[in-house]
Image (cartoon, rainbow, N blue to C red; front, top):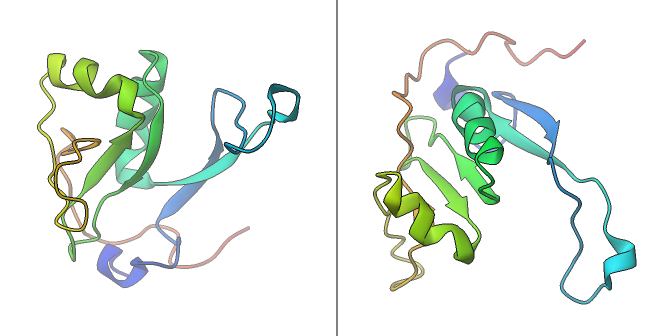
Length: 119
């Protein structure tokens, strides 16, 4: 199975817990809890590196050869991403927002190693 064939189904991603506790905007601090996210396998090292630098990400996608790849960050980390040399990925659906960045990881959309099988 090619990476492009996994677009939207999560078969080219790893489930991993965020290194911080999360809550929805309407919840209070006592409701913070661990949260599991899916990260495309080709971006996992870069995203974990950002986490280790204290950057909170909001989402990411390698694009699977179909769309432009991005790593989203919380607004307060936009200046830091720019300082680290990241280029803003402009989203035509949200003109003016600068919270998505082009990954630095070289992306290859070859064979997906799990072939859609888990376990």
